[in-house]
Image (cartoon, rainbow, N blue to C red; front, side):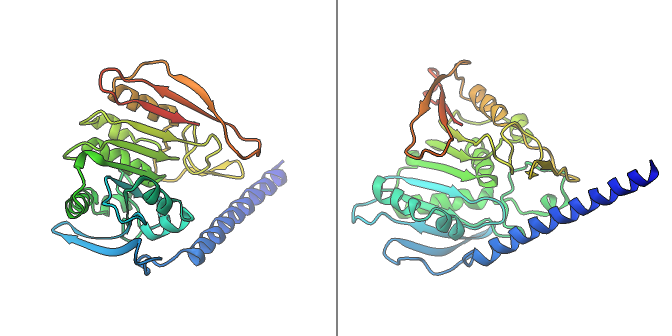
Length: 293
């Protein structure tokens, strides 16, 4: 019996080492493929890389313009995921953000979080030592957004914000705490936080929450990240809240109906996946919650 326990312990250790090696290899590959934090803009006519400084510090950013000569009518702020950057988010989109700027005649702002980890302070893990040392980027983000809207004479009521993973959680935080409301929020694979639930929202804001049911970084049903079906709890890291938790928080913040109108979304690809859209109407605030799963 003791021999079997020893063998089981050795196997568990080997699995742990192999898992760490796989994660390290994947991270190394992402670093090799990652463009520089502040690389040259892909096209000087449609994008610009800059540095914004104020009393709260500095942020690097990329700004995408529509290809037409018309004055942009709105601004969309897109926040990258943990460990990435604004230019990386541009690169990962494979040109779709530039296409969005041109199609909708808007500006797309891609800030970089900066710092050692290049993460946004979304307060998902308030007890982690690294988080407690971070500088809050919210004040300088608000200032950068104000500068861009002023420089390009964009109505502040026509500013939307979104983000991927850590960026989406930060976008929800900014939407709740902004000096003036955003017109809409959209998130991709992003849970809300216990901090935000406790703090609440200053404004009802239309929001679209997109979350895959097989998400391994921020599981749809909540919990810790996983790899090959194995979960990895970490000291000082909170388990993520679920996508339904996030929807419920926003449904109450926006005073939406308890029951949604749900319909399937037709997609061109025949890859065995399916998508449904559930819309929770808000007659009180005209701020619906749209859950795309």
